[in-house]
Length: 145
Image (cartoon, rainbow, N blue to C red; front, side, top):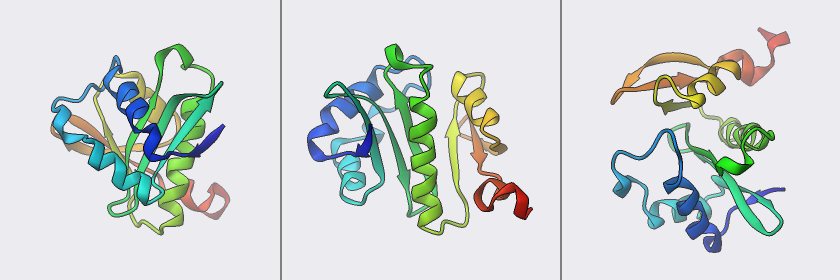
């Protein structure tokens, strides 16, 4: 059900991103079609497809170690789609050998609770968003810590 996103998926990805109820873009011009296309071209964006329809996506940026996107259409929430897409994004960054794996999200959101439950830790604040980083033990395996 998870696959690499393609250029033809971009309109649906943009639609899902624009429809979120939390973590709305303060400045929609920060995420352009061209921006998403870079990730399509560099294997950093993945889609969850069900019945021929994209219902969620994740994106990871191996240039800086960030997870820049994790969104699921609200009618498909609570089914493990987000967890699976999140794991795929983390795998991209781990595979790229990123020293720091991080993301930002608004405080007091379901996303914040999701990342905390996944074992990520808050390391700062950036533009009023929480900065989360993957625990080193999550990357190498708890038995190695």
